[in-house]
Amino acid sequence: MPSPRRGKTPTPPTAPEPDARARLIAAGQRVLGERGYDAATVKEVAREAGVNQGLVHYYFGSKDALLLAVTQEASRQYMSELERLRAQTPAEELAETAFSWGEKLATDAPGTCRLRYELFALGLRNRDLTPAVSQLLGQGDEEIARTVAHVRTGHGAAPTAEDLHYAVIIKACVDGLALHHQLDKGFDPLPVYALLRRIILASIEQPPPPRAPTRKPKAQGRRAKPSPRPPRKAPGPRRR
Image (tube, rainbow, N blue to C red; front, top):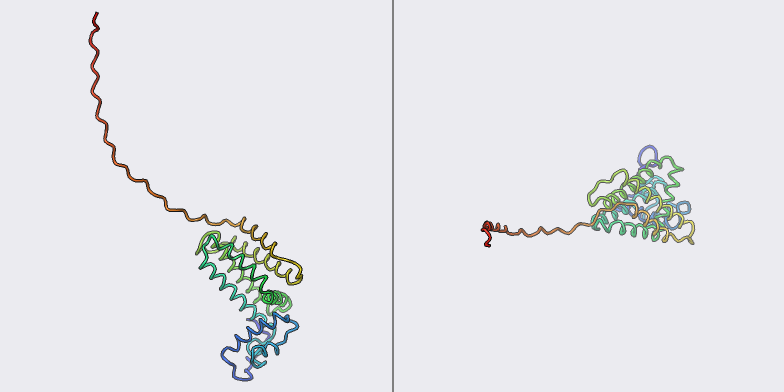
């Protein structure tokens, strides 16, 4: 993870607790998501986590890097859930299930979505963070592509270049709709999600449902050969 720190790693102000970093990430998700990146302070995050403020700089080096860590954790949870859906959902139901879950995530977790877009903007401004943000986007594309490959080809299929193209289109559309909803609370993204789902599912070639095993016809017994017909007698001379 990139960090603007230079030189030696700073010494923690006090002996950090074993779960201090995880608590800071969880607190950062709540505080940054509710107040926004610019308004929130590392002091508020530390207070929410119940740790010394100096631990924010010890573990992350800056508020920028904290935001990156928070978004990486949210992305890890997202990818784990997609992996679980692939493992537990029949291939013919996976597309509908994954779309429904993605729609719910984009509409019911506005704080997480907001942090994602804050990070995108930060990646454009802070060149130290740009490679990590790009890597995060690529990891999301690959995980969605695995799901598309399962839908198109079946469980265990490796994603192709076309699967990746589908993933990029889906992610870009969902991000755009969620961002629109963030900026305009009067905008209802659900009908548009429904249309997007129909367009994508109509385009994706799904594997045919498994065929029922065919029954082999019963072997018929060998028919006996008909006995040869006796030769017809030649007609005798007619009587006058």
